[in-house]
Length: 273
Image (cartoon, rainbow, N blue to C red):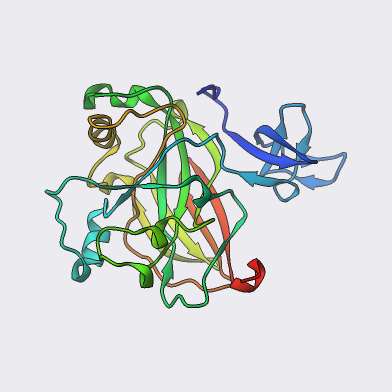
């Protein structure tokens, strides 16, 4: 992938076109009177406020690989429902491209859902082809990182530890972004605090040091039986603290040094269903 090693990048839609953009932090734009602490700059030089664009996943996404039960505290939280242990192989599954939306997007909660929850996750973006990669060489294949919020509806689970299609492949069920943060800006991806806020209240917190299978282990495992390509993304799992969310809730998932991803839960009515 072509991300500059020192610049956080995004993809957005604006004025009828898709643009590459970079983070812009210059304080006050005197010409427009805008606070631009969370602004972005298009490649043509225009500086825009965050709310002026439609945010897309920050890179062209290839295969989406998600990990379940990859934090020990979350495994304990779900212990009554699980038949897996830390000695098992990583619980990995694939997601379809239609499941993705960007920063500030809306995710539908179906009317028949009784328990829908967020999942704040560190997303690892592959930067070059990886096949049979050793743990020692795994991190050389990482282009960067972003934030994922991978929603699940527990009502739809047919098997309590193997997610099915209705749980993890619903349209717009996974927010990704805002930024692709190059690996060079993240000294240690295994020392990042992550948290979720629902309507401003912290409901989930954890740290990537508690991953059961860390990033090199995941790349070694996955590349042993499938070829990873540039643009593939690995969602590394979520810590404990998942709670039910309802239409109208603003859910903010954030990871220190990576970004702050905002998403809103909406009802069937907004989608005409």
